[in-house]
Length: 239
Image 1 (cartoon, rainbow, N blue to C red):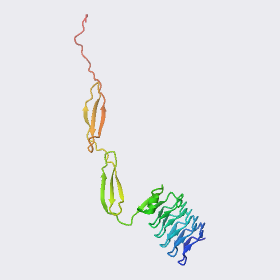
Image 2: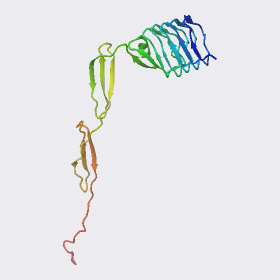
Image 3: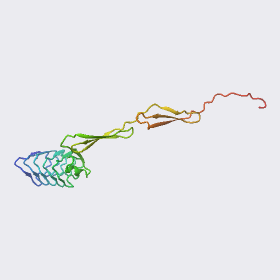
C-alpha cells in the first residue's frame, strides 16, 4: 500500500479525488510544478500527517484535504488565493495551518469541524479580517520586526491587574502585556480601641502599597476578673 508519495515535477495539477481514501498514505511532497489541487484530491487520507507543498500552488479546490484527520501542520505557499468550501474540513488533529497574505477569499465551510486547529495569518491580511469574525483560534504573523513608538501603562494595584500596551510605528499593531496584581504589603497591627471588660476593642493594619486599604480585627471584650471580695463593714446583729 502507498505510504509516501512524491509527485513528479512533470505534474502540473492533481485531479479530482486522485488520492481520495488512500488510508495508508502518511506523507506527500508536492513540487513547484503543481499549481492546482483538485476537488477531494487527498480527502479521507486518514493517516496523512506530513504535507509538503512547494511555492507555485495557486488553487486548493473544495474538500481537497477534507477528513485528513492525522495531518499536523500545513504551510500554504504565497500564491494561493482562495480556500474553497470544505478544503480543510474535519481535520480534527490539524495543529496549525499557515495562511499566506495572498489569500483573498475563504469560503464559509473551508475549516468546517476543524476546531482544534490554530490558524496562522498575517496581520491585517484578508485571512486576519475573516478569522476575527469567527470563533476559530488564530495567531498573527508579521513580515517585519516591530518598532515600538508608544507605551501606555495602567499600573497594577493590590487587588487588580494592570496592563502595558506597546504600539508598533510601522503597522500600528498593539501588543498588550498583563501586569499581575501586586498583592497587599500589610504593616503591623495597631490597637485603635482597647478592649475592656464589657466592650469589644478594635485593631487595624494598613497596606504599605495603598493607605486606603485597611484591614480591621475585633478584639473581644476581656470579661471581668473578680477578686475574692471583702466584708465591709462587718455584719452585726442588726445590719
